[in-house]
Length: 252
Image 1 (cartoon, rainbow, N blue to C red):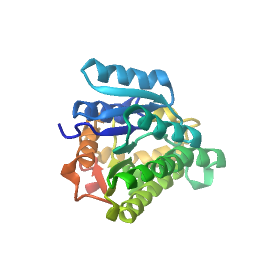
Image 2 (spheres, rainbow, N blue to C red):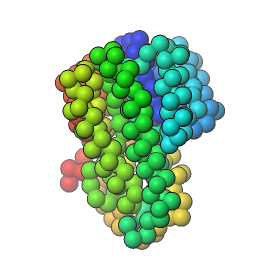
Image 3 (cartoon, helix red, strand yellow):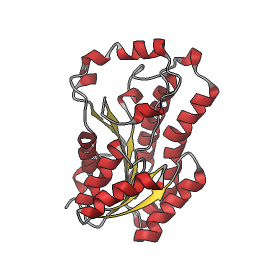
Image 4 (spheres, rainbow, N blue to C red):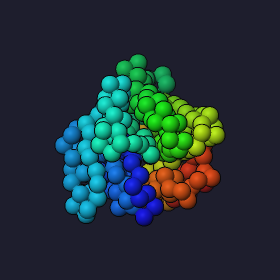
């Protein structure tokens, strides 16, 4: 097993990529702290894990709130005594608005979850990793963080920020035994569009213009396998970079 006895925190793990990552990590021997906005959602993933003999615990946490981030990392320490892997998967979509139509409310909401929450979980994990002299961070970015218009202005800017944070963290702590990488998924079958309100039709039409070039839509398990590689010792020489997983969509 590639993650035997490792302790992993996975945010946004009630569904989609986060759920797939949590389940795969558990199958590979990790003890998983499953985090989501609702305890019911996180608990459902834990139930699936324990059903096949895996080890997991559920934590209700809104990563846009600093106190919840503190409780989340504390829960890992209280439950399993340490932390080895942090997966920042939780995220929300914008409404495809270009810059001229973005409201402060939307911008701040997207950044609170997609950027500030990621920074805060990393900030809480780093002291643990420094003490151990080892640690792995996997951030779920997006092809929207590599290109200009795979989403609206808020989401695009936020995912670019995640890419920058990933690279900075990877380099700054490389000599401390800590690795930080990101995955940039393309189109994946998840529930993230459920977070879209007040759709900006013109903005979406422009975003979707390139969607016809997408070879196929991925499944959460496709991303989970990449996340497993990055968390494992097989990726010991991989740090501060972004792995694109999009079936070749951005290769055009």
